[in-house]
Length: 589
Image (cartoon, rainbow, N blue to C red; front, side, top):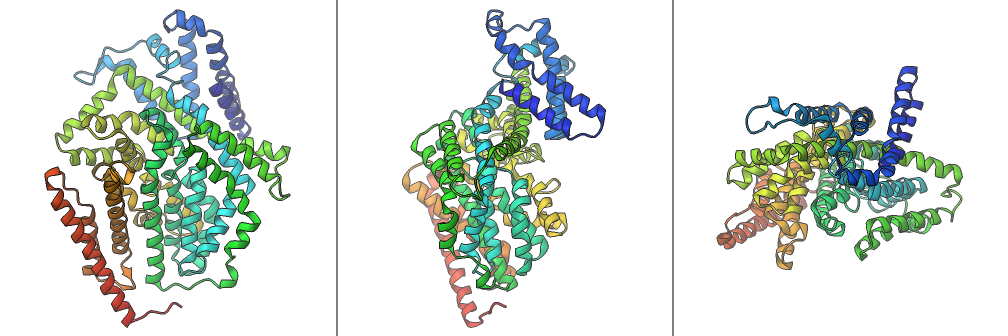
């Protein structure tokens, strides 16, 4: 019923946006077809059970119509890439008898495909659609409501008040505010075009080059995809796929997200020092206390939501309470009050947001259905394992490349669904802990937001900054380097996922932050004074020693010795450079 209702209204919205009559008629027809599955399956529920889910002639006609509607919806909301993947999956299920060898099969009839896609829980109405109906819809509604009531603006103003007076303050503001706001909406591109319209011109005004300003905003806006509690809806999907409680996933993902934000804060501050950028006039920067006293209460639903989730409430119940609290708080002031028409706008905006997710989960449902029907998933896992042999590092490198390629241009949720189905089982079969495996493929599946040739978030930032798209993307990669190296720590240093003993967690987290700082300095090329290539290599070497995995447990002493040497090298380099900076100070403009 959720699918039928949402997709019908989604197609009506698409129809109203079209000028050409034939396109409007196609979308109206799709809306009518989308109305059918919910009532049909509800009415015939017991008949489906009694028949053993064997598709009737009506079911076969219906599944063909629904698949066509889903393909049109996916094309409209996601793009051609996923349409092609679904088409290949369906063709593989039907024409598999034409493929010789291991990857062929006997082929499946339209009736068998129809029963699997329409009448089972492994097809269109499987886990992904259930997650969308149960969790993602409510959190999307909450996110839109929070933005509508002005909480996003409060985050920006608060970040501005905290960081605006520091050298490089506007960039620090962009990092903090974009990370918080994008953690609500879960979309890197949407966040760039909202907070970026404020932060990018401000960064350019204080001296940041246009491509650097755009890259900072793009990389910061990508933080929301990996930051709890929502993580672009992937946290809920991951909980269903892995069977791990949502709260544990959110806790495990917290330290890696903080590493990413920490790396960006260090990088943009060093960038400001290297370019000797000016500070903002203190009179332009608001004070923290007035911001908190005037609008700080609007942050309450966000913290209540997090508190309820970690207190043990189900995500659904926590979201409902947060929605009610948000609306109640909006009534306290005239400028935040939402009337009847405002609620209609919230509903429409929520539908726009959720339609991308519904298209993604519908596509994933068809893809998962075909993989489970044909058994292709285990075969792909076997291929990755065969290519990697007994070498875990090689398997991880192959998985990294595959995850990046399959995630190109995909929204957060669909990228994760695709990779969780195709790639993650290989790592789990190799013996990698299931949470580490799923977070590993998740991080690399999201790299395309800031990585050419797609780099949609970076290109959005470039358009606002009026900078070159590829140059902006390269700056975003430099600033968001944590997404490239930290997933390997999920496997070799699981303490950063807060797994293991207290000693292991403290050790892994501490060394990870130290290594992140060292790499940020190396990539920036400045720490108190400009760094020569030799000094930059020193910081790179320190970071490698700090995270270098010694795979044999018999060599734990060597592991600690190497990390101790890396820490000593890092501290020594910082002390020497600070001494040089003191003797030859650089005053800001």
